[in-house]
Amino acid sequence: MRQRLSSEPDRYRGRRRVPTPPRSRYAVVGLSAFVGAGVVALGAASNLPDGKAVNPTVLQNLAHDSDAAQALAQRADDSGRANRGENRTLTTKADSEKVAQDVWLLPLDDYVFTSPYGVRWGKLHAGIDLAAPEGVPYKSVHAGVVTQAGYNGGYGYSVTVRQANNVEVIYAHSRRVLVHAGQHVAAGQVIGEVGNTGYSYGTHLHLEVHVNGMPCDPISFLRDVGGVDIKLQVQSVFAGAAQAAS
Image 1: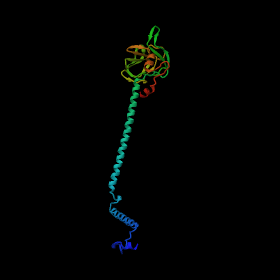
Image 2: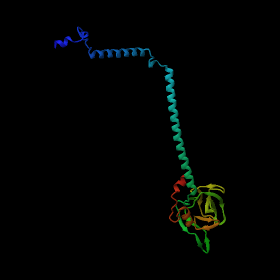
Image 3: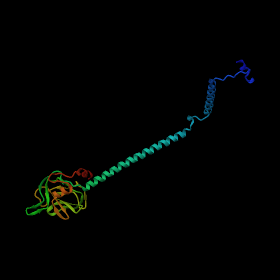
Image 4: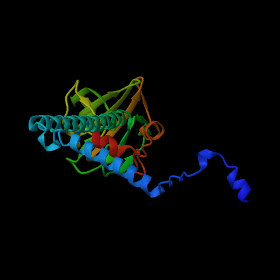
């Protein structure tokens, strides 16, 4: 062993190995550098303007712009809802008016059916008779234009209303009439009062329907065209909507 040690190179003799510094020392040095950089950064940050030092006018303008934007958005939303509501109202009104133009109704709220359409005493009884107390108001069974209103010979005081498709309805023997020629009337509108004028035997409303100038049975016509049953005193299912529109 001695022989081998003496053969080592001269550069290794008499020298001492420098000890390796512990790893904890490197950690302390790195931490110190990081802390130092943080201190420098904080020092630089201390020179920046504080948020509280922002011009109050700028903040006020920003808040005002935000409030204005919200107000405009709210106004647009309210306007949209108003327009939608208005459109629905207009649509509903238009639908009601259309129903009022198309519907057929009973001429009286309460009556007694006393005489049908047909030959009576050797002559054509061209309408039907509905008995009711004198002065009771009667109504137009359909929308149309008044072509005659006043005294009319054997009909007494009567009203004639022309509808579309050359249909005319005559209301006769009235105590008085409440409309005038040329007036537009709606279904369910009061146009006269029950009476006993002209060639009449008892207080009643005489109702006639003429199509193209020729009389027809009002019972079958109103039932087939308007869903109105004179004998059962049943009128159209749209009666409520039509009367509300009028």
